[in-house]
Amino acid sequence: MEIKELEHVVVRFSGDSGDGMQLAGNIFSTVSATIGNGISTFPDYPADIRAPQGSLTGVSGFQVHIGSGAVYTPGDLCDVLVAMNAAALKTQYKYAKQGATIIIDTDSFGPKDLEKAEFKTADYLSEMNIDPDRVIQCPLTQMVKDCLAESGMDNKAIMKCRNMFALGLVCWLFNRDLNLVNNFLRDKFAKKPAIAENNIKVVQAGFDYGHNVHASVPNTYRIESKTKVPGRYMDITGNKATAYGFIAAAEKAGLKLYLGSYPITPATDVLHELSKHKSLGVTTVQCEDEIAGCASSLGASFAGALAVTSTSGPGICLKSEAMNLAVIMELPLVVLDVQRGGPATGLPTKSEQTDLLQVLFGRNGESPLPVMAATSPVDCFDAAYQACKIALEYMTPVVLLTDAFVANGSGAFKLPNLAEYPAINPPYVPEEMKGNWAPYNRNEKGVRYWAVPGREGFAHILGGLEKDNKTGAISTNPENHDLMTRLRQQKIDNICVPDLNVEGDKDDAELLIVGFGGTYGHLHAAMDEMRAEGKKVALAHFKYINPLPKNTAEVLKKYPKVVVAEQNMGQLAAYLRMKVDNFVPAQFNQVKGQPFVVAELVEAFNKIIK
Image (cartoon, rainbow, N blue to C red; front, side, top):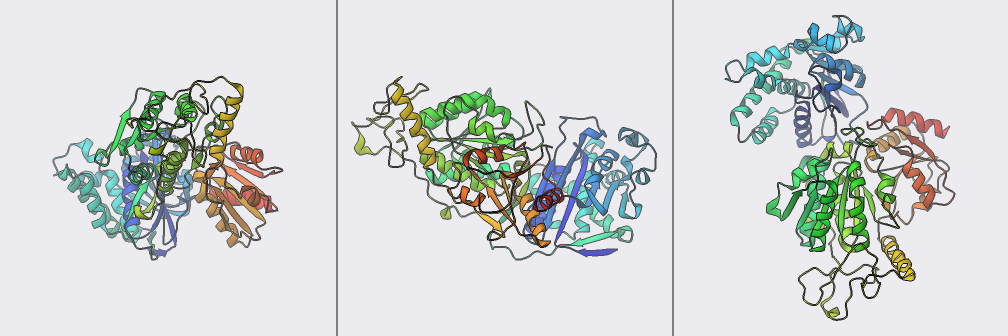
């Protein structure tokens, strides 16, 4: 047995959608984050709601990349692959490195299992050209049954514990402290302590199995943790971080938080998370449809709350009318779009960046609103906070883009100190304006004052018809409409966003990589690999898309070659060409529903340089 000391290791758990691979992966990533490793995760859900057991389309995966320092992606290929059945091995082996350690449950490789997985022979390892010396062939199901034979659990409940045996074996491979796993399970099953203890027993059995058969295990792994910034850390998903960011912004602004939403994959977890926090002044309403969710949030905004609505691409289509109402009424509203594969219902559990032009332009009339994009699961907290700050201080709806990869993935999150975050100051109408105020009076930034209902002397009406700039009365005057259109646009243009940051060889790069949102980690990793090869490469990644940072044109025109890489057919590239004169970049576009593969990025970018 060889002990590999590595800076980075990638583990992929795979099995049927009911095998608990997401839970096993989450526990392993949480334990790794707790001991100081950098982590990045990628839950890869099947598109089928419940595919037949053992089928190729029903395989669920969870990949986690752990490192001694910063980790930017879940990794292209894994060092350790857990395959709980034949279908998992058949579909997931392509994600394993040459020489990877593979753990299989031999009890799930019977004749019927092999037939469902479309193997042609009983010698499945030879059929896939897998070296049996790299495979830990474990009768996992039977060992779990033996472990829990006296537990009083029925067979169905026992089978649900198989994932914990695999987790225990992986924890042994990486010398993880089982006390951290046990604490996680006792917390998760606090109301069912017997289940917690039975799962803990199975984890220990898996750990002991690895220890007892170590002579037949090809590798164990050691990942030393580099010193982190002191503080409390947790493993957090993007959706949970987004929810916490909304709560933090409401707390900072001194407002109640309202979420009007309709369940849709992959955004529903935000509704679930916020519904747990009534004690923090959060109100959630699961509405009958998407437009009702958005319209109810707009009503809450009119009433003086921090209002949010959450959805994915199909829901943005349906919310667009109410979003447009928020534009003309000039009320604060945050619209969260967790992008998924389209068009129509498309690929509900997969990730894309294909809603960009929809959120920028997908409404009738001149309908400007700010658009932001979170760059990582951890960044979702800050992005949600900033989106709320912009919405409240500029009295405008704001779209926050994440995507399925960012929303379901996770990272090591340092719990923030809210006192260090910037203040949020809504433009409430001053008391001295009583008697001389009208609904569309504006402050020095061109922002309409917010008159919350209940303040004596500030009663008013808003609506979807154009209003007179001075009186707030309905107006069809052509000059007034032109003026109001320009005022709404100027307000968005006035929003102050940070300059576009350039990383890498920012002074003398021969290639500038450009992206936005959730591809940041993959593009950064590609840049790092190319720089290690001696190439001069830089990265400019957009978090603020409308308005663009003031130095956008300066950055994009500074370098001899620029490539815009995005998970669509070129939406950001088209937008930047529209905004920056004579900007003609190279493009790298994929629409696979999967994250970028760093090796493919490096190959493509090297060709552009040559």
